[in-house]
Amino acid sequence: MNNEYKQRREQLLSELPLNSMTVLFAGKGVKRSADGEYPFAVNRNFAYLTNIDEPEAVLMMVKLQHRTSVTLFVRDIDLTLQKWNGKYISIDEAKSLSQIDSVLYLSAFEALFVSQLTRAGVNRLYLDLERLNLSDRPLMGELFAKKIRDTHPALAIEDIYPKIAAMRTVKSEDEVKKIEECILLTKAAFERMTKRSKHLTYEYELQAEFEYELKRNCAAPAFDMIVAGGVRATVLHYVENDGELAEDALVLCDMGASKDLYNSDITRTFPKSGKFSDRQKILYNIVLEAMEAVFAKIKPGVMLKELNDVVVNVYEKRLKEIGLISDRNEIFKYYYHGVSHFLGMDVHDVGQIENMVLAAGNVITVEPGLYVEAESIGIRIEDDVLVTEDGYRNLSECIVKSVDDIEALINNG
Ligand SMILES: [Mn+2]
Image 1 (tube, protein in one colour):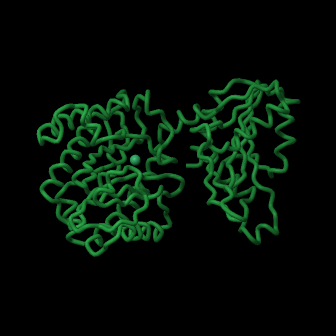
Image 2 (cartoon, rainbow, N blue to C red):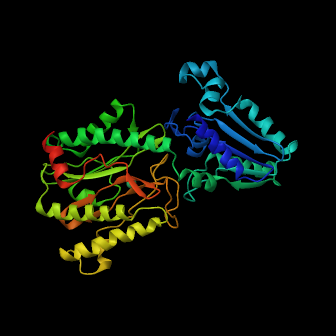
């Protein structure tokens, strides 16, 4: 398994020009208030190449004419701080996890970095310059770039992010296994929650059942869970989860587990009472039909955005049939998000939605929805799917979703 990380480094190095250096930072916890910090979340690209989940660690890879070198830096041991914050990773642990032979303390980084520029002749520096919004806080790669532009203005600085992102969209067997494990954890937590739903009154009580099961298995929620009853389910990112559940409500739960730096992302919608009304059933089965139609389309070579057209085509036919719409354009009053995104080390994983052509090894979500505010009905059903050489494999098939299976699950709880 560890060789996988080595292979990734070798593949990335093979794509880089001579006389270049790549520096990636693990990052560190962000100040929350006073001396409190938000939990540390390791930079995914750093972890993807190192298998190290440790604050302040740094990866340096140098590619020259006659040699390449890979060096990992970890925090210098501080005996006093360790008494407060626990043990730091040791050099030996870091070597064994990363399969990097050269592991040094962070205090050695600066001198070694500069010597690559002065003595080894590196003239190009690759950093992770990921940025989503203009107003986002700069990540460490960006802060480092600013510093180096000041001290070494002649050095070319480039973004390594797109190269690593392209690698990350194709999952290895080991990565798929980790996602499947997150799905199994989600299944257990979902079943615990639904089996008790009849006896619960508030959305946060369902959330507590779900999260209890994850915590019991040493996993964490992959994101802020959505538990939305009735009309609240028509708000896509409703996360307050403090509403009271009406007896006849449909409950939409968008949920996932996170473990070993991988995630699941699943949505199920079910009747609190254990029985769909006739109207709820009609709308639910239309969403399910759209979902099955998307599955049938998935294979290498298909553009991700084509999947959305499949949903719209099913909706146009069915929603006209039941008289909810009379024109195709009206669909978007009831369905206002995309049907798919990539899934992996991030829940909304790397990979462009706009121009991406599916390839074997991609893991994507399939999540059609239908939101009829006037009827207090919001439905979304979401599975996690692996693209295979000849089609797809639904990794979350094991979590029930047909009307009969959902009703049976709740009523046999
Ligand atoms: Mn999703």
